[in-house]
Image (cartoon, rainbow, N blue to C red; front, side):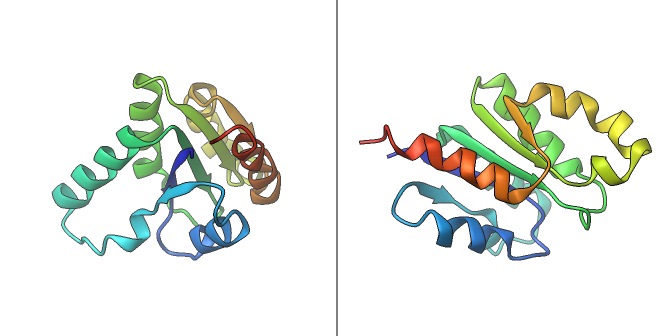
Length: 130
């Protein structure tokens, strides 16, 4: 079974939507569940489980203030040659942000503009897991 790391804001419950809609099809590593507050500790946890994953499902919603953490996770995943599915809802509404975030988009394997489209694509990876 494919292992999926859920990268993105911890201020919403988007991770629950992903896990619920694809329950039983993947093993999920969800940083929202680790309850670590010290940056050194959660960064070690995040990068450890990112390394163990086959797929990084990265979600940048409009409410994410900066995307800095997501940028680190995508860069690290790219260096490890992981499959990166990025959902970027912020760039389409913020041209200045889009200009500077383009390098992150280009580092991803594929980019979608909505969570729904990203989920449909991620599900395609479950059909060959065994």
